[in-house]
Amino acid sequence: MQQEEKDGRRMPAPDAGAHPAGPRPGYCSGVAAAPCPVASRQPEIVCPDGFVRTCVRRERVGYGKTPGMRLISETRPGGAASGGAPPAAGWRSYAVCALAVVAAAGEGSVAVDADSSWYRGLSKPAWQPPGWAFGAVWTPLYAGIAWSGGRAWNAAPPGRRGALAGSLAANLALNAGWNWLFFQARSPAAGLAGTLVLDASNAELIRRTARFDGKAAAALVPYAVWCGFATALNASLARRNRAR
Image (tube, rainbow, N blue to C red; front, side):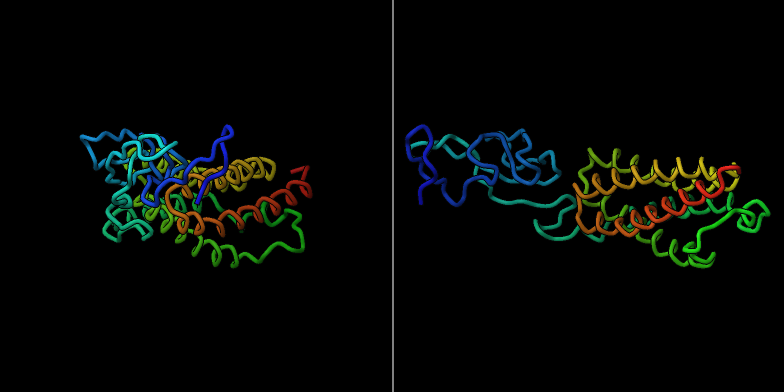
C-alpha cells in the first residue's frame, strides 16, 4: 500500500517491522515518541517510559525512507512482557503503601469527634449519610488506594517513582488534614477549602498513576468520586452554618 502524497510525490509505506514511533531515528514507542538514547553499539536500552527495548539500526531502504530503528523486543518495567501486568514480586511496595495509608487514616481519625456538642449542633442536609456509612465506605477506599499505590510503583520506571511517591504522600496528608481543619478547627469553611485542594490532588494523582498503569489509576476513581461527594456535603454544611 502507498501512504498519502507528500510534496506531490507518493511515499512508500514503511515495512511492517519498522520501529513503532515511525522512521525518525532515536525514538521509541510507549510514551508518544519519547526521545530515547538508542545507539547501534547498545541495542538493549531502558527508554524514558521505563520499557526495556532491544533495537537494531535500520538503514535507508527504498525511496523516501530515512534511517531508523527496528524494534526486536519490548519488556515492561519490572520484567513483565509487553501487554502484561506488573509482576507480583514487588509485594514490598504494596506493604509500604498499605502502611502509609493506615498511618494517614489513623492520623485523621484522631481529630474526628462526631459526638462533640459542636458537631451535633450543626445544621445538616437531609441527604447526609448516617455516621456508620462513612466508616463502611472509607475502608474499601483506603484498601484501593494502597493497592493502586503498590501496583503503580511496580509499573513505574525507577526514575519516576520519587514523583509518584510524593504525589501519593501529599494526597494522604491532605486526606488526613481535612479532619483537623473541619473537626479540630471547628470550621466548615476551612474544611471546604481543604477538600477542594484534596479534589485537585486526586485528579493529579490519577493522571500521574495512569502514565504507568491504567488499572491502578482506575482503582482511584471511586476514591475521587467519594471525595467529590464529600466536597458537596462540606459545601452544604458551610453554607448552612455560616455563623459557626
